[in-house]
Image (tube, helix red, strand yellow):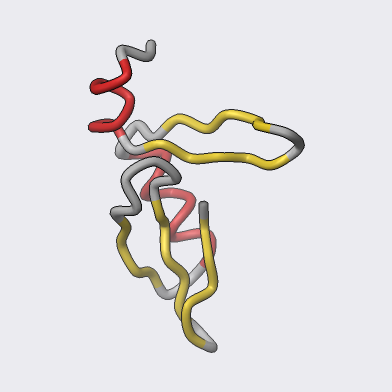
Length: 61
């Protein structure tokens, strides 16, 4: 997920392990997730984001 953590800061957070990284913009967080190979899945109408390590642990694609 991408979450606003401060007035002008955003956090890219894995919905499985909770690890994340802080960014100045929502776009920077989204680009980071794309570049690092994070996967997103639609679950009950909400997008969930998974870091590469969690994907490997679960044996996902």
